[in-house]
Image 1 (tube, rainbow, N blue to C red):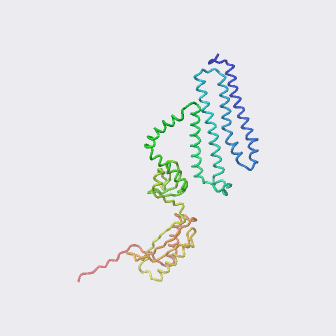
Image 2: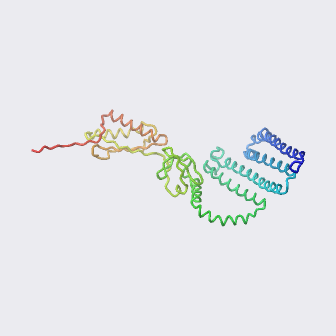
Image 3: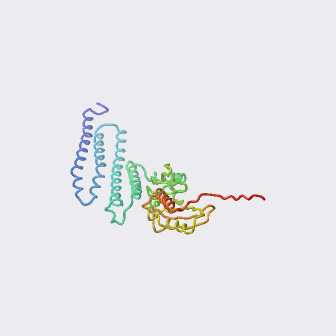
Length: 349
């Protein structure tokens, strides 16, 4: 005897487990070689999703049953057998929960995601960020229900447990007000579409690109390449500039010409400025303004306003425009002013 069982019983139990492993390998091979080929030929995608999500939980279920049968035929003592029985009741429920969660998440990605071209004609289709929110919500609900059912399956009084949690939940809620606010803030950001991952936004003093939108916080990488993590409730409560959503970027340039510039030359400078947007890619040609704005302390000031559209680069386009202004003004003989001061000295008689 070895641990209250004969070597023959141990070998039979081991053979059952090994047989389950072999059966799983054969089923997995049959599924890939036969079942999936059949489902791919059908017009409906549901059967593909069903078999894909069912395969792993099914194989795990077979192994659980095999181990259960192998252990059940052995004499392991009442305490050990009771622990094994309760463990398998929990594992069976969790395995079914795993399958349901995988199936619902796969169905959401297949039939609701806007990234799938087949969903373009449907009335309801969500972008990648909303799909992520749906997946997290579905997983939370399914696994919560699965956990409750698993505990109930082993004799836990769910009503008493919920009552205890409810009393303790009041204290926890009071201590976690900011966390709750952050969670609702995360849902608000995703539902309203305030911004998306990859957008450039400005929140207070921080200006950068969104790297992740979480349930508790949002992470952005600033223009200085630093990572800033901002609680969601602060984003919801304050103003947010979504720079990526701007149709155009306005650029205001002030130019100073020397006081010896004639009115004819000033008009020529204005005409030159108005003609430049059509010569540079990415600059809007409709909304352009060039005016003689003021008499400065040491220059005649021109104000030049133009807009960079979505095709232009907000960094390189102004540089191209400034170079173009410099070339054309120099070619036209228009002289830029710099701060000067004239001093008159009067000699005493």
